[in-house]
Length: 202
Image (cartoon, rainbow, N blue to C red):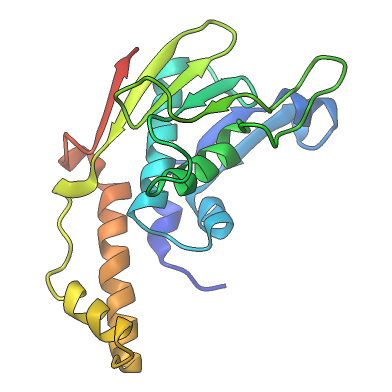
């Protein structure tokens, strides 16, 4: 399977999943989530998918510092309804990483390992998302704003040609290159854009 090599440059998210440990799915329940895993789940790589991965990465760092994040013990809230804009896409990515779901998740075993009721929408917050540790109650608000990361100026004309069915095979290939260049910039050079990801204690 061929894919842009920058996927492998993106920082890995490592979590401990007590359910995976209990069921013997992974040694000690340790799960490593790579960006390419998320691209496979989503079916594509774009600024929204990249942003969902990044805000989860940075939120977990802020919540757990030097300790390992615990999958299934993280609550996530969104300001918008699930159906609005790209909220559903973002929530799916975050759910794949943290295990949190609204109502569809695992109901648990003897009162343990439940994954449902850990995700809420239309929450009274002002950030892109709020992440909360279930065990301590500590929360962080995360804002993602990729508007400061420029796109190649030739990308939009190519997109128009593609939408109109007028693009050549070479046009389509070049559009994909331009598109992924911006996603790569978001994921691998985030320190160059101070307003890209903002994390504050709630």
